[in-house]
Image 1 (cartoon, rainbow, N blue to C red):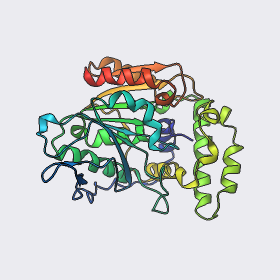
Image 2: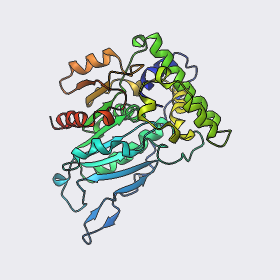
Image 3: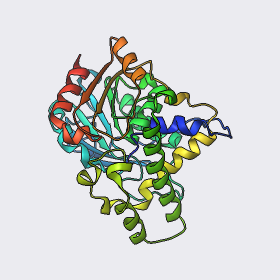
Length: 332
């Protein structure tokens, strides 16, 4: 249940790509929506709501509040957290706690993870990038100078794509367990694990479009050998697979469509125009980054990479250490 291998999987699929289509330009149909939600201190002073649905993203705000009456220099730094499959926004709660005294924290789940999808085939990657842009631009329009983006799993893939398209809109980027990998760096066993479990979830999503109900879905998911053919051996221990819903698998289908339609995969290249912290777990059945990616991070003064003795969900299993590393990176 993960998108961790999405990076290597994309390169495997790209070799089979037979069609091409230019990625559509961003559609800023939410930019006219204001972030200001309610007044607490009279006219001219507005606070952002603790929860807000903005397009296909649900924002859960905590930490230092932002008031519209403040001058630009008084706004706290904004920390955007975007999770992946199959997590909801509360997966960030323990990780986010140390930041809430200094940062305006916005916890978000990947579209379709908290509420059912409203599009039959799910949300495309460009749509997710556009949704992120509208969130970031809303804070920029309010005068927030420092906006940091943290992505995990599918959230990391979306963050890489976003940083390549709109690097000037974010201050720094943190990627958790999904980076950039070349096809030549993927071992045969890693390629097999990646293809098997992701095609399995893709198949289940397509099946769910035509067969209602979830009993068969949960039966198949719970009988899949995740310990050996899944990306993280501890997946069954860490996640309650009975809570996973068919529509949450939509990113896997969208990945297939993205590779078949894309003229090139440049949005998945190394985001060279933004400072990056990359953290990853060492104990997995397949790697979601390449050694070249790590080497490149080491060569750039503004970038860092840190490996942890854990699996895919670093922000849950190593939340204290991960938070300390992120704080040091953001404040450096």
